[in-house]
Amino acid sequence: MKKVAVVVRQRQSEALRMAVGLTLMDDQIDVYVLDRKVEETEQNLLNLETMKEMGMALYTNCKENADMQFLSTEEIAKNLLQYDHVIPY
Image 1 (tube, rainbow, N blue to C red):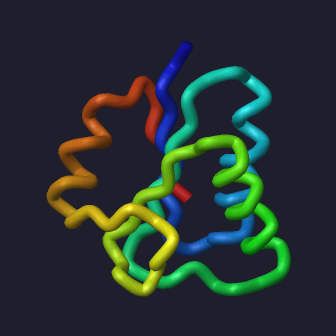
Image 2 (cartoon, rainbow, N blue to C red):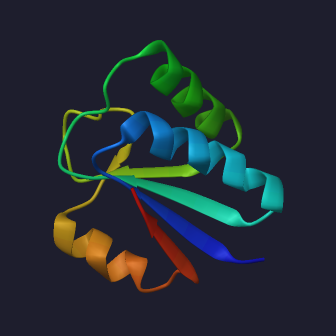
């Protein structure tokens, strides 16, 4: 099993959709939302709900993302070193 981090910045909807899709590979997928609140679109909310149901880890450095585990930017950078693949979006 590979460990994959999806780093979400600009294209939130596409990144969240892709992160859910990556679960089909049976790898560990963790999501890091950086620098801003997730836009509350229908698609984003559905993807976030799906991720939570699947037990995916959701991290953020933006305190406005209340349903995610808050980590400082430095902690996120340190965590990313443990992944086999880091996919920036």
